[in-house]
Structures are given as structure tokens and as C-alpha cells.
Length: 276
Image (cartoon, rainbow, N blue to C red; front, side, top):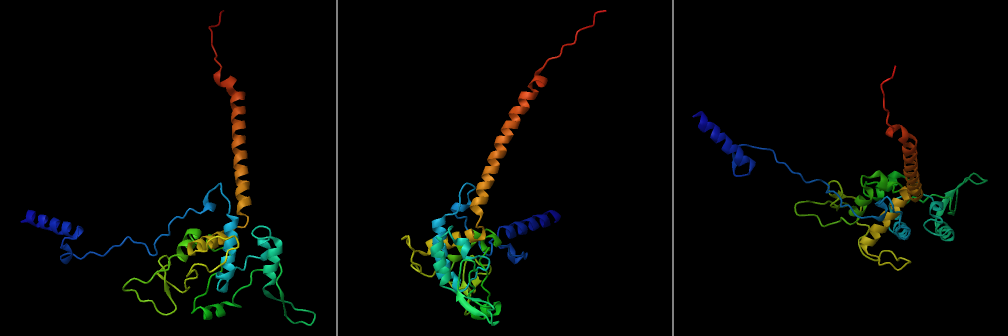
């Protein structure tokens, strides 16, 4: 009887493991290996390579996408117009763009604040005066500042690109209340930001590049990556120079070490019996 009981227990365990009806006899917790949200794909952005720099034409187009699409909700308080001068756009063009914004300055001689056209030393203007106004205009959600967003988020460039193109119709069984939208790559699947790149042709590129949704997403991601690290190219170039100098110094020191010690390491010492 003991032998039969052990065989029956093993049969029930095997049926439970392979889902062959044993769940009705032994209750086991459900297990799911799927991640929420799904891991964003690893896109081949040019800047990821150790030997590559920023794509300045793409960064320039990405700034236009940010200025005409993203700047209506998101701020970039740590970036100034002068940062883009002669790096992304010519200084004359940046002065024209800065002058198109009204900046509150002061106080003047009468102790009052006044409004003036923007100049290169001014920071990017925020779309909302304070956080409460931002939350009120966006259904309680506060749009994050994008100054260092690609470095603040885990796998920032891949995540932002996947998020911008991850808007879908909600699957069956998921109810989306008013003011929320379904996005595959956002934690929980529901995001308060409407699809910013909802159609092609939202921006007129000056260089004639086709303005598709994926192109706009790539360009704005490259711009945000550049904004997070404006000195990226100089820093990477300096690092490559330092690595090259270290390798050359290692070779020189190795050659000197062998040449100086070769006589001691290869010499032969013979001992002879002393003759009395």
C-alpha cells in the first residue's frame, strides 16, 4: 500500500507540472515570466558606438520637432539658447529663434517686471508657470523636464524611441478611462500623454528629409541625447586620445623594460671548483 501511495503521489505531481489535470487535485500559484512593461528593443543609434559622435543634422531636425511639438508641454530648464549656437544652428539663426519668445525680466528702475524679446543667454521658456498649472492642464499629470531625460531613464534613447512609437489600441479586457492612452512600453500600459507624433508631416524639415513618425522620433531622441550631454563629442575624443597615449606609453615602457633587463634575465652563471 505504501508503494501504491508513492506512485499515486508522483503521478499527481507530474500531472500538475505538465498541466494534465492535476490542478484540480493540487492548487499551485500561477506564474508568468512576461515583463511589464516589455523591454524596449535595442536600436542601432549612431551615438552608441565608442568611435561615433552625435548626428548633428539629426540633432538639428530633432530640435525643430521639440520646438514645434514637444515644447507645448515639456520644459528644458537646464538648456539655454547659447548652447545650440554654432553647434546645432548658426548664431544668427539662434538669435532669431530666441527673439521670437517673450521673456519676463526685471525689475526695472521703477521696480516693476517687464517683458522683452529673448536673447542667447536665456534658458528655454517653460510652457507652464508652475507645477500646479502643468498638472491642471494635463489632467493631474506633470510633464517631466527633458533636459537630462535620456540619462535619467534606464536605456533612455531606446526607451524614449519605443515609447513615442508604442501607442496602440487597448487590447480586449483593458478599460482606458478618459484622459489616458494605451502605450505598450509605459509601466502599467496607461499613460497620460497623448500621442505627440500621431501623424506624418507634423514638421517641415528644412533639409527636405521625409517627415515620418519614425523619423521624427529618431530625430527628437538624438536631440534629447545631445541636450543631456552637449560635451559628449569632446569628451569621447579626449578619452580616445588618452587611451591611445596610454597604449603607446605601455608599448614604450615594455620595450624599455625588456631592453634594460634582458641581460640579467638571459645571463648564465657558471660556478667552478676553486683550485687550492
